[in-house]
Amino acid sequence: MATKINKLLLILLMSVASIAGFASDHDQIVEEETGEEETVFNPGEMIMHHIADSHEWHLFNTETFHATVPLPIIVYSAQKGGLSIFSSSRFAHNAHYNGYGIHHEHIYAVDAAGNEDKSVAVYDFSITKNVASLILSALILITVFSLVAKGYVKNKGKAPSGVQSFFEPIVTYVRDEIAVKMIGPKYERFMPFLLTVFFFIWFNNLLGLLPGGANLTGNIAVTLMLAIIVFVITLINSNGYYWKHILWTPGVPLPLRVIIMPIEIIGMITKPFSLMIRLFANITAGHIIILSFIGLIFLFKNIYIAPLSVGFGLFMTFLELFVALIQAFVFTLLAAMYFGSAVEEHAHDEHDHGH
View 1 (cartoon, rainbow, N blue to C red):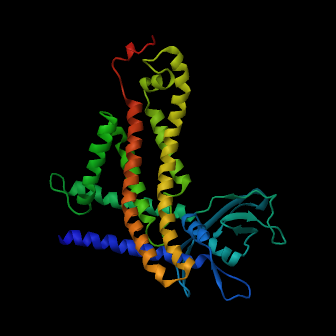
View 2: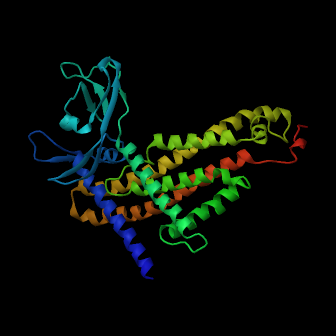
View 3: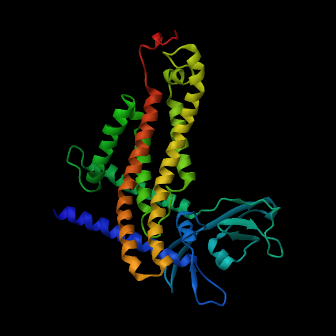
């Protein structure tokens, strides 16, 4: 009973902290009008500031203190003498540095007058907030599962304990309920990837809900790469029956085969595309809804709207904790289904000729 209460308190604390973290971002988008005491709040800019990538990592902001971690700027331009590396703090207060400027996270070359020089090609390889979050999550995953591996060695033949006891049921579930059921006897070769992608998505979904967290799994470039990896693994492991089903569907008349072939090819491509969009849209939508509720407080400038906004925001944050796990499960499940279709074998496919 005490353990359940502790877990609920931990979830509640995380949710409240997330709401506070989201709310602190509003300082970034308050603009003062010249000669006016009134401030203008733009909820759209506040939301985009939170979910978009950045060349510096804002942790939290108050009226007197801004906790920001500068990140490395790495740019290359042949016209500017090649590679240039410096801190993003050099761009503080919209200043130019080393012949470069930045506007809305776009780094550009500047001329002697300080204006943008569009004739100069600039290639940005910077360590952005999402890249830094990716590295951080990778280190967390390596650390956690190194401890789990040590637990397996230490408790060999014994009941699991510590970190191992928490993650072992999850690993077993992914193996038995996803890999074995969706792929079949050849599931073992795919287990390392399925476990990696499951925990990578789950951990990053949770990290994105922390105050100052990065919206990594809500970045379409990240979900695109995950989908491409799934697509490539599917193609590499596909057998003859898979390609026969795609290019020359067995068991149907010849005219229909000609019609079905392009549809199957399009379907083969749209499957990873749906993986990309599903994860990106669900995670981004969750952040937008929470931020929209919090933004109502500053938009209406009315204290009476605060309990309603915070209440709905807190509810959505609770919901997002479950969505974080569900989206990791769905992505892993669908990836396993695609792998299973690629390695599926039919012993009687010699009878699949057209009539």
